[in-house]
Each structure stands twice: as structure tokens, then as C-alpha cells.
Length: 103
Length: 492
Image 1: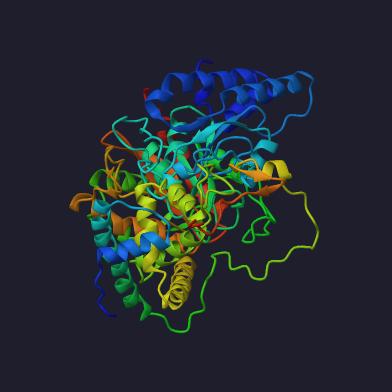
Image 2 (image 1 turned 120 degrees about the vertical axis):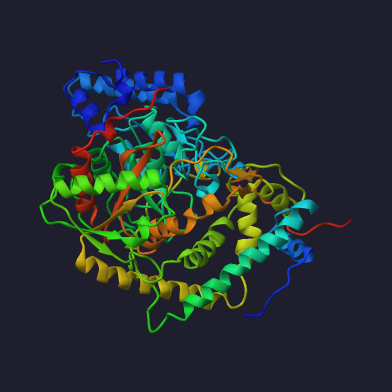
């Protein structure tokens, strides 16, 4: 595995894409944390050598192809479904605008 | 009868059915207990005392009119705050959902309410169940009722502390690998983790979906079986729900037959386990020998260092589940001029450990090669399962300590990180072997009180293959009947 270097700029980038702001002093600690997080992949790679022809176990219950009858069930009322939003309009959730108006 | 709050579920049920006590008397006793001790324990994030009393009054009216009594009529229970509850706040211990009022009942809660049980409150937990002390909760740290300077364990720490403190008759918790049984062990109560899929996950705020198991925390083994029989069963809202017949476990509980084979993994008896804990476990083994158990020394599956497998699966599943917190549909927050600002303002409310999980741990599993890594982790899971199958051909169940140590002192978590040192870091690989290894296979297990070390409770962990709940309950019951540890209560 290629040894990676982690910099404050990596943290800045991750913070922006995951939409979680962090302060500058915190960013310094996060460089170490990120390095530690990647290091577990090294120990995982050692275990991968043990895999022969095993099929994956996605869930311990090993249930496959779960279907139900195509029957409409009673669901939440519109009022209840919208009860935890800060803004709504005629039965819809209102989201702030996606694009920024620079004017 | 002064201490009604100390009753077990089955004791309370009997007294209620015989009309020796009323639902109101029982509920009032618990409310009084909460009023006297909650300031010290901090087991609850939200209390619903008024509605509990109202429900108890209605139920008593029904009883007076000789209407049929439901199995849990008048019995108060506490619910971990990661279970959505209709019209009661559900915070999952996070500022992210500080204002979220549940819109429906989790299947488990719905079933218990239908059986007549009364919700007394929502219990404290580690934020999004990530942690083992309740110290990562955004709201409070729960105290261990046996020593207020110590922690109750976690993530279901509030649920375990509330039961032993008499602030409810029983409670509900959930675990990915030891979050029911570890706090049960640290607080001196019974914690039962069912087989993955036996109890519906519908309505539990999701983290690692292929590992989550809801289960009861009680004062006796029979109670755990009774509550499980009411919680379990197929639910078409959970695609992993098992279609199996659910027995009345508590009625089928019996002492084990002579010659039952229980495995003693060498790895659970290492020098890294606290001496006081090992002493109690060895004493418990001696007691079970007198009941006719045949103990066989075994080796655990060859892959013992499971943390990297677990981390791959856990992180990938958590990544998909935590992505939903956008502040639009729930978690009312200030409404910003654009979506980007909204996200940033809202997601800043994640606690330090969750932020760290998202920004570093999730980043580590989001590279291009991750699909193959995830698939290989699932293959290693199969490998572990196959090795356990061989073990369970030679033994019925496996036994050992639930936790390698007694409850930690408060202050183990500070500013986004656990303050581990050489004395505590040595426990981590043992916890992996005790809890992570069987959890990857979805095995059921129980922690039952088995004595004290330095005046703190110790738990005996008994686990077995999938759907071996009855066998596990029988073994735990056999041990419990030969000891008095489950009758001990802390002085508050």
C-alpha cells in the first residue's frame, strides 16, 4: 500500500465536501486522526490474505430477496410527516435555495 | 410494600393481576423514586411522568371494570433515546436531533405499549450510540448507581442505570456489539442481546444497520425472557426480520440438563483481564459445574483481531446513515439564505466524536478501492461464521466475562477523544474478542450479574449460535437461581 501524507489542506477539503465546519486549531488534530484512520486499512490488508473462496455475508440473517405484497399500507398523515420541519408550504418541505444569487 | 420500584416485571405483574397493588401505586412509587434519585443518576434525557400517570389511571379504571388485563398492564419501562417514540422527543443524545419529536412508535415500543406497558422516559446514551460510557452524549453523563463517581457503561448506559436505580421496572436498549450487555454488566443487571433479526429494528435511529439488535435490560433472567417474547417476531417494516415462531421464553425457562457443554475460550482468561473480574467469573464457573455443566477449553476463531473488519463494515454503514441529517425534514434549525449555509450551520451541531468519525474515519473508507475492501470484509465475516460453526459442533454455549474490567471512573472521555493509557488500552483487544467477534455473526448473548470487584458489579457473558436464546436463558437462569447477586441493590 502506498504511504500517504496528510496535510491541513486535506482536512479543509474533507470539511468542505462533508459540510462540517471545523476551526483551525481543530484541523491540526484532525491531520493525526486522519492518519490513524487510514492506518487501520493496513491491518485489514493483512487479514485479506486469509480469504479463499468465501461468499460474502451481507447480513447475519442471510435473508435474500425480501418482497412484500404490493398493497398500500396506512402511512403518516401529511400533518405529522411535516411536523418536524421549520418551513413548509402547501404540504411540501421548503428547502433554502440551492444556487446562490450573487446579485 | 414500600419499595414497589424494586419489583421485577413478573413480581409486579403478579401483584397487579391479584389486585394487591394498582397501576397508579406502582407508577407513583417509580415517579417518587425518580424525583429522589434522578438528580444523582441522570439516567433520563426526557421524562414523561404526567402521561405515564395518566395512562396508569386509565388502566386502573379498566381493571376496576374487570376488563381483560394485558400482559404488561401498568408496568413502567424506560426506552433508550435512539428509539423513535410517538409524540415524545427522540434526541439520540445529539444536538442534531435536539428538537425532534417522534412521529411514530418504533415496532418494539409499539408492541410493548400494546402489551400495556407505560413509557416513563427516554434514557441517556452516547451520541448516536457511538461510545461506551454515555460521556459522548450532548446532554449529560449518567452516573453508575453503585458509585456515582463511575460510569454506567454504554451506549445504553441510561437504560441500565435506570433499572438498577429503580427508576423503571425494565428498560430497552440496543447494541451493535456490547451496548446492552456491557452497561448491564457495569450496573449489575441482566442484559439480553437477541439474535440479529429476531427483534425488529424499525424505528431505531440507524447507525450500523447490519449489526444493530434491540433487547431488554431487566432485574432477572426470567424477566428478560418475558420481555423478549413480547418484543420479538417478524415485522415487515424490517427487511432483515426473521420469520420464526417466538416462544414464551420465560414459561419455557428451566434449569439446564446435566452434561450441557459450555466452552471456555482461553482468550477470555488472559492476564489483561482485571484480577477481581476473573475471580468472580471463575467462581461462577464452579457454581455452574455443581449444576452439571461440562466445561471444555476452546480456542476462538483464528481471526481474533476483528477491529479492522468491524471498522470497515461499521464505517461504511454509518456513512450512509448519517448522510440524511440535512436540517430540512427534521431537526428544526435556523433557515439560512442558501442550502450550503443551512448544511454548515446544522451539521456543526454534531458532537466532536461524530465529527471525527465523519471527517476522518468515513474519509478513509470512501476511496475508489473501497468497494473491494467492503466486499472482502463481508467475506471475512463468512470465514469467522464458518469457524464458529465448528466450535458450536463441540459446545452448546460459550462463557466468559462480559467486560474485562469494572466500571471506569468519570472523565474517561474529554474533548472528542477517550483518554486511554496502557492500563485501559489493554482491554480493547479483549472487548473485540468478547463482543465484536460474535456480533459479526449475529449471535445472541446475555450478561447476568455474577458478583462484585472493588464494590462494583461484574457480569457473566453467555452466548451461543443463532436462535439459541432459550438455551442461553436456561443457563443464565440456572446460575441466577444458585446465587443472590441479582437481588443486590445500590444504596442511593
